[in-house]
Image (cartoon, rainbow, N blue to C red; front, top):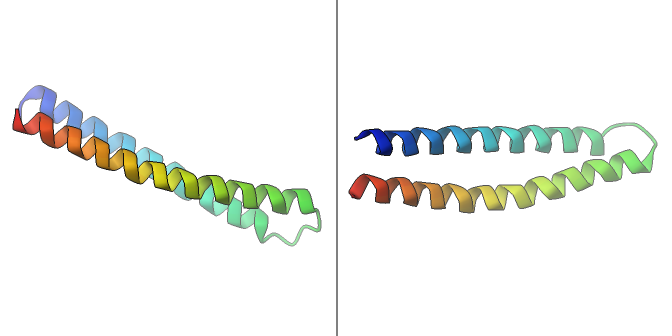
Length: 78
């Protein structure tokens, strides 16, 4: 691999790992808030909103990971 190919590959891997880590963290926080024994509905609804946002983020992360993988593959072929 040349310099630019390895740079793109490493950058893609780091960005993807960071994004999935943030997704898992927000998913856990959302479930912790939603399932908490606190009798305040706003907090539980906030947890539900975080979970819904995390699901949408997971979809876009999957799409973005596919695009990054395609770019890395194409950079390696040229």
